[in-house]
Image (cartoon, rainbow, N blue to C red; front, side, top):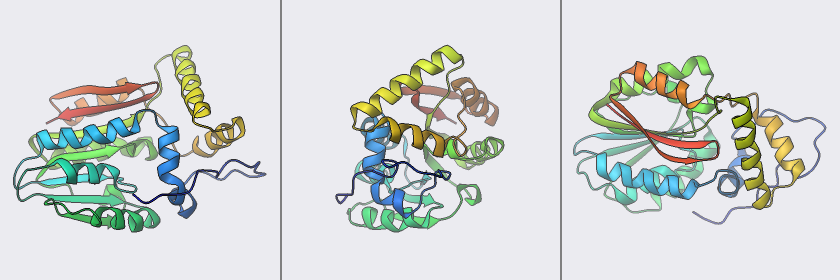
Length: 244
């Protein structure tokens, strides 16, 4: 990806803090924002590629739902060797998809990629061996999340996988407070000020309602998945693999 600007969106005091959204301002600084905000992000992306390499099957479809700038899609294009597959990268932010297309098509791969600007709830998942939800489900209204997981399950082939990364809420207040404090310290270490941390938290609190791990497990189990493994965990960030 080309070099992008440093995230300074919340560096100055704001008289009004609007709800966070993936607009042009966020897209322009997104790579810097995600690296400085999500612990282990590169590890998650790299291993999405490795998991997809292991689980993608010939003549099937792969989906990156809420693909943002396409990092997970790019990781899959670099690693997947299954033949006659198609990758669908989908996001509802026009600004994201525009840049995502440039990033993905600049990389030559045997795995063709198709980008689409749409709500992931409108996507018909079919003949899928791999579906990725990388920090996407958390931005949907909680009442809509089960339907998305059910739709993915129905569209996965037997043995297919859902790779789900999420920021979570710990089951106890004490534990959750500790994990939040550790995450904020991580952001301070990466150069964010107290003002930036506070204003970003205010902006995002109405648009990102967090589930506990138990809620994710119950939703995935209810959908019908056979197994669920947490393969990455750092503070209040996790990534899981669910197998049909």
